[in-house]
Image (tube, rainbow, N blue to C red; front, side):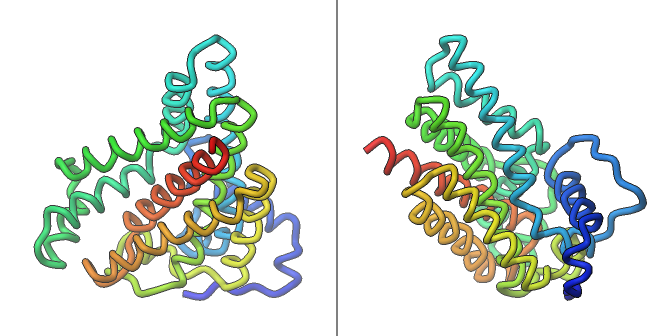
Length: 263
């Protein structure tokens, strides 16, 4: 499904605000006002606004980190509170995708069985281990940055940058099945994908400075590897695969920022 719009529509500020609202409704549990019903095509059209949702989510986690740090909690204790805030704000939607993919790819032996496991609401050992590692690595990376200003900037950059990659991933490769969230959303327009990447790059540059380029490369590489791995396992992408890709990108950006900043 292609959702290209004319220049006049793109420059319509009312439509831009509507897209930002759609992105916030999709990525967070905030009670955002919206007139009408949101369809899958609306999510694809609003994909350019993904980084705005990432900035808000990262800023919320960063604010909690700063408060915990000000209360004299050490970085290794402040970081988990920051991550918990982001997960509460998003409903842990991407963590859920990572867990489903880990269970499906790890526990299934056929394409059909992997897809079946991914839709099962029960959580298995592979999902538990993947989520523990995801939280632990991100918390350690944030804690390594230590200073609130640096850690907050990295959280904002990681959340915005990881979500900025998703529209491009939605254009690269086939769908694994004809139903589900990924199928309903369809394929964002090329302009929306490029706009998301541009906005995400700006946030990365502002937040990470000289570290932005390697962080962007490792983040995109990790997310792209997830999508290509999914093609081998199940023939394409699903909503869970995109959620797992976001998690891997977020991890890669934070680890890169910590490694290059601390060293």
